[in-house]
Image 1 (spheres, rainbow, N blue to C red):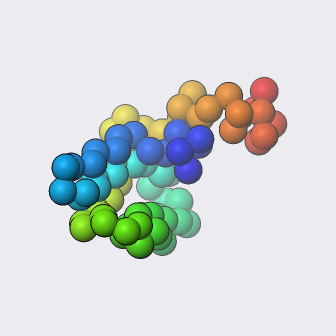
Image 2: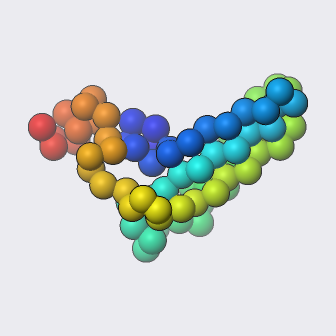
Image 3: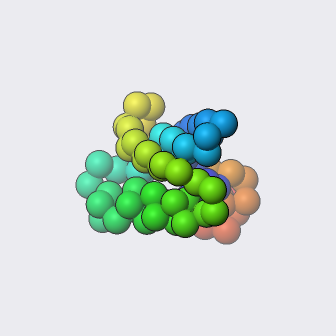
Length: 78
């Protein structure tokens, strides 16, 4: 999801609290309910991590321009 440009910001405090600010390809994305929760669970399973917050935003809106070159190549956009 990072290579797809969906992760806008990652903040990790000294206490190992993690804040993720991310977007989805569309507000109607079928993963809108499951993806943020899955990210929260996977990061929370890392030893030492105390709290994980995942915030979904659509500002700025996601676009293909946010994708890495590798992701664009793999998905046939190049």
